Image (cartoon, rainbow, N blue to C red; front, side):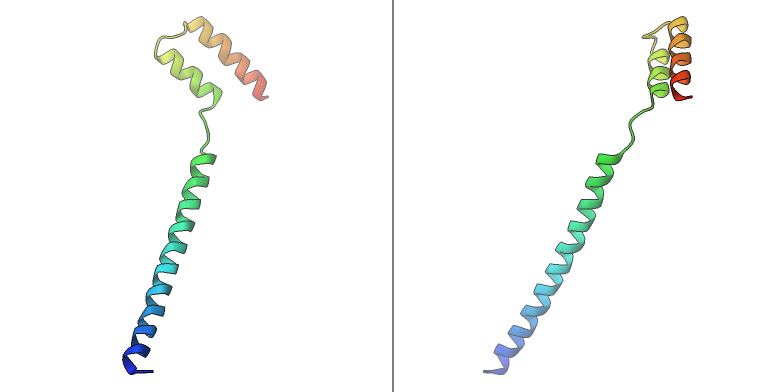
Length: 75
């Protein structure tokens, strides 16, 4: 074996390990982001109700009635 072959082999291993670890870290980051996007909490019932009332989709009477029902369900 020539010295050039040994040096090429040596650099090839370093390149492989750098690519391997970059792929590994990228994979972990991708998994964490994926799990976080799946587990993001949805709006609570009360928040959705408040949003509907603020947009004028329901009347004040309906809002109060539904709000009391939601509060009773939580207790």
